Image (cartoon, rainbow, N blue to C red; front, top):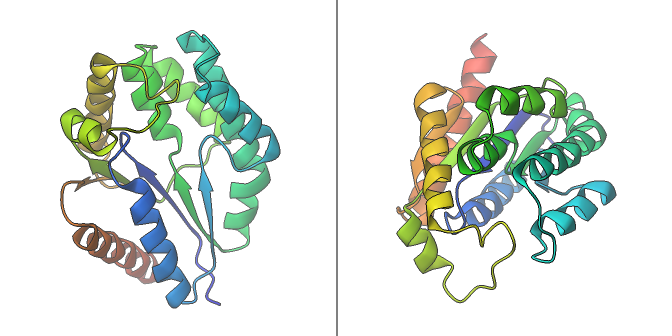
Length: 211
């Protein structure tokens, strides 16, 4: 198996196609015999999965600050126990969401101070950042269409205005951090999106080799 140190996350609102693209990338890495682990946020450790249940359950009425700290606690545990050891072992880390979601959902969506969000993210990620983040961009209307009939969790039930602000947050990141936070058209075919992802990853790997 080939060892490549790379941290890749996927972002976007529900229905954007993250799960499909992660699965396709897993299959590609397996074919290329590249060692990887695949994670989700919040989750990935026993402690973080318990926090996930709290965050997503409609039974729990949480204010934005409590929500923020729960996400960061789950992230800190996952980073320390799983992400850092995997990167140090030379593996590719795939993550369904990382701290960019907190910036978009709690910063823009819940309207919490963005500098406070950045500081919390830095602490919870133990100073680590992603090598590349793929943002699958879709409209709120397409998101609603794709998730129609699905039972919504607490976060998914936050309403249209909230999700329009979340989209604004993701768009802001794609404009201010274009080298790391890469916007892809989530309305394209899954094959087209996957090929773009593979091309970008290979380009970054080749660039690192030149260095």
